[in-house]
Image 1 (cartoon, rainbow, N blue to C red):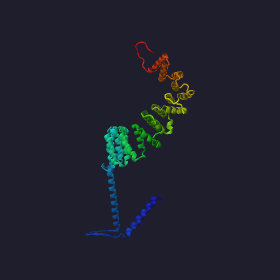
Image 2: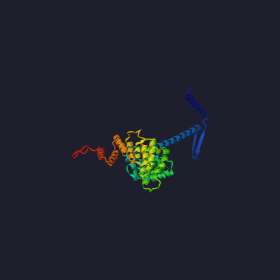
Image 3: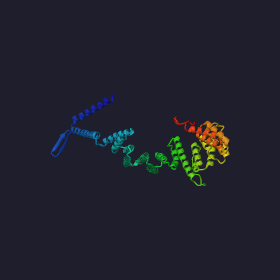
Image 4: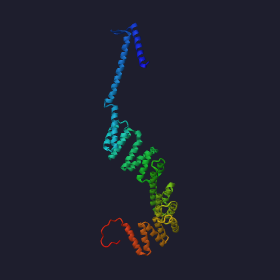
Length: 413
């Protein structure tokens, strides 16, 4: 048997029993109030009460339905305002993404008071106002964002710092980020922004202090992190070199002080070794520079370091020349090494050897510096004709990029 058949059978059975009960004893019900009275059977009275209850339930459901419909249809209801604000916010964000700053600002600002999350509206609107270069409006919007959502002070401050940096208001951005870092020292994006700000301010010493933290949190890729560290240390070495040139004799060289606090891997970086030795040379510490270069070149040969090695004056010029000549068998045609050997031979007053090295270097690579060294050497050796010939070759190197133009008289070259 199906369940529906059983249900119908039960209803019929109950109706039959009720019919038998009514027929057997309809009962009597009297309701009297003042001069009014109602007489009926008890079964009719029960049916009337049941009908009244059903009518009240129906009226109650109808009232609820009307109220719900009113909220959906009534344009002034809270639900409808929130829905419209959400639609306008979406349009404003789309305009922002497409770069329509004026439309985006208008829509986001209009929807903000009724939006479920007004912070998003105010922050995006502030950025749109910034793009329109309406900086006062951008600041006002950030202020309204804080008034509506005070617990989002970090997000608002970070946005403010970004806009200040974009405007070039670096000191104001520094004050904003300093406050954020003080109150929220573990905020990583504020840390990254602070690093970018110090870089723009060229505040190398403070940026140096941030480098370990930036590396620990891996806020940059490894290549970018190394490039940043290299840039910072090169700048610090250069600043120290400038200070070292003004120091009186006997005081510690600040260049060496900076070098000593560099992490060990960076003391093997060619660019940093080059900067370090050039600053040592500029501050008069050429002996130290020669030793550093010799040790570095013993471990790894590099043209740039070889070039500087030929410029510095070591404690023992003969030993310095001998050290450089040890690299010649592995690099017999290296023009940079041959130029350095020529200069070191000049420092040792070995005129013939210096000429051989310089001529070999110029034959390997026609370089203006090598030419100038040869011209100066030949002139002092009394070989004026050879000196003039080399001078012409050097002049030809300098005018190589000149266009072909008519000239008066007989050409000199």
